[in-house]
Figure 1 (cartoon, helix red, strand yellow):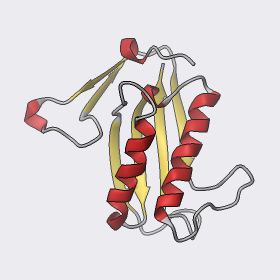
Figure 2 (figure 1 turned 180 degrees about the vertical axis):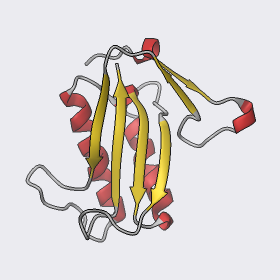
Figure 3 (figure 1 turned 60 degrees about the horizontal axis):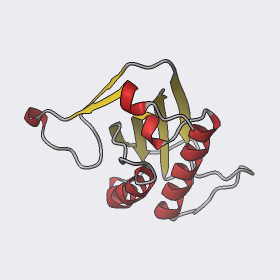
Length: 138
């Protein structure tokens, strides 16, 4: 798996913007390839929902799917430069952060992409509680 991220990705947190928990304020990219990953939901390989009414299970499945997408293009979590996270209920923020931190702990050093987190009234599937789209760079 290619990991040229140290050469192509700079994560910055100027003191004037504060120190964010688990993400970067600025990500600078000088890449050979940019990968756009469609919104990942809690569907398994057979298209079945994992964790109906269970946010923690859905978040784990979403990050699992994100990992599959990254490996498909010979990348890892360290190549992620931007995530957009859609939550149905901001009360799940802590559970989301726990799943996110486990996912990014799989690479050394743990990656910290720029992240936008949005609460939405619904997602394309009535039972989906979380969806994440991503951009990676190599």
